[in-house]
Amino acid sequence: MERLVDLDPQLFHDTILLAIAVFVLFTLLSYLFFNPVRKTLEDRKKRIEGDIAAALADKKDAAQVKAEYEARLKNAEKEAEEILSEARRKALKNEARIVEEARQEAARIIQHANQEAALEKKRVLDEMKQEMISIASLMAGKVVAASIDTTIQDTLVEETLKEIGESTWQS
Image (cartoon, one colour):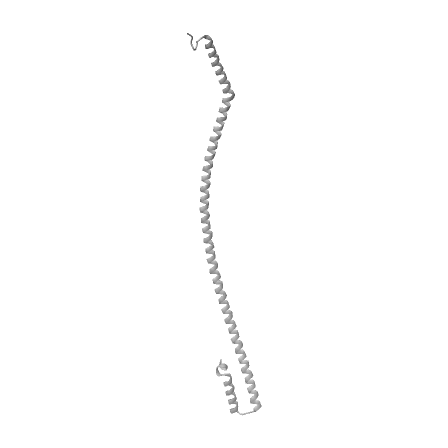
C-alpha cells in the first residue's frame, strides 16, 4: 500500500527550503514593504493625535474667547448704562442752566421794561410841566393884554386849573 504522504528525505528537504524561502521572503517584504507601511501608519497616527490635541486646544481657546467675549459684552452693557446715566445728568444740568438763564433773561427784560416805564413817566411829567408853563405864559399874556383886575384874573386861574385838573398840577 502506498501512503498518501511519504516522509522521505526529499520532502524534509523541500519543507526546509520552503520554510527558509518563506522566512527570507517575509524578511525581505518586511524590510521593503511592511516597515515603510508601518512607519507611514505610525506617522499618520501621530499626525491624527496631534490634530486631536490641536482641536482640543482650539476648543479650549474658543471657550476662553467665548468667556472673554461674554465678559466684554457685560462690560459693554455696563459702559452703555454709565454713558446713558452721564448723558442724563448732563441733560439735567443743561436743563437747570437753561431755566436759570431764562429766569435771568426774564428778570432783565422786566427790569428794562420798568426802566423804560419810569423814563416814559418822567417824559410825560416833563411834557405836562412844559404844557403848564405854556398855559401859564398864555394866561399871563391874556392877563397883561386884557389888563383886568384881580377878580377876573382869579377866575381865569380857576378855570385853567379846572381844565388841567387838580391832580395834574399837584403831582
